[in-house]
Each structure stands twice: as C-alpha cells, then as structure tokens.
Length: 202
Image (cartoon, rainbow, N blue to C red):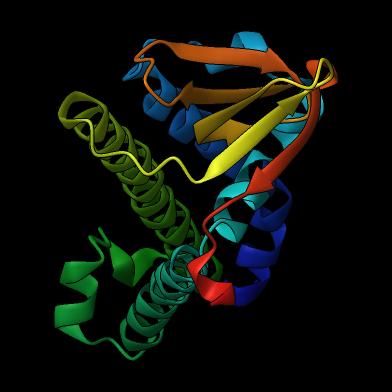
C-alpha cells in the first residue's frame, strides 16, 4: 500500500475530526465569556462548525491548507528517503528495526505519522484560534473598545445598536451598546439585522 493510499483511507475520519475541532474551538471561545455554546447549538450547527470557522476569514482557510500540505509533504518526503535507506530519515521517523520491516509496514508507519502530526497541528490551530479570539473579545469588553456596527430590529419596532459576538441557526449572541451584559436572543424574536458600518462598501 502506498503512502498516499493510506492517507485516502484516513479521509473519512478527517471530517469527523474537523467537527470535533470546530466544537472545541467554539467551546474555548465562548467559555471565556461565560457561555456554554453547546446548550444553544443544534446538530446542524455542530456539523457545519468547521466549515463556518474556515469560511469566517480567508487567512484561516489558507493557514489550514498550508498545515495540511506540510503535514502530508513532510512524512511523504521522509518515507521516500527511508525507502532509500537514508539514515537521517530513518532516525527522524523513529523507524525501529527498519531492516526487517516490509515496505508496506514502512508505508503504514508513515501514514500513522502523518495522521498524528496533522491531528496535533489542527488541535493547536483550532484551540489557538478559539483562545486568541476569546481573549481579544474579553479585553475589548473590559476596555470598552467594541465597535457596535450592527442594529437589531425587533418585531415591536424597537431596535438596539449592538456588537454581534456570534450567531447560529437558533440564536444571536451580542452586546447592546451601553449594556455590559451579554444577550442571547432567539432568531424568531428578531425582525431584521442591519450592518450599519461596512467600511468595505465605502
């Protein structure tokens, strides 16, 4: 079995792992502002959480692609060098008793190496994003430096200028201007939401 074939066999578990990472990222982020986001999430929110994270900013998507490519390229490169009996590659890959191992066993070793390496990189990546975004938000709340660039319009014609922390298929999570208390409002109670300060359109 080739190294690339081993990776293909691991792909069905890849999305499941991304879902777990998306949940972990959201949980770490909202935990810092005192919210258990899982209580306000549906199964669909959980399943699309990694996609929502990647689509939130092009930089995140580019960074993830770089991580995946590097995680694949490095073990693949080591695998080729180990098959050529390069001592430095064998040592770096921690191949024990490589002389008695079959080629398939070596390929399996590098497939497992790729999976472990990628899992570690993704764990650091998603937890880092969640922790960093959460710390940034708590600092802005504490220093009162939030930009309230959304307006929520309610069904009774009342409205509030808000900072939108996040949303899912059921709720808006936000801070109203002049009120330090975080609010969680069902989507059904909101008539519309307006972006009042879109610099990209100016």
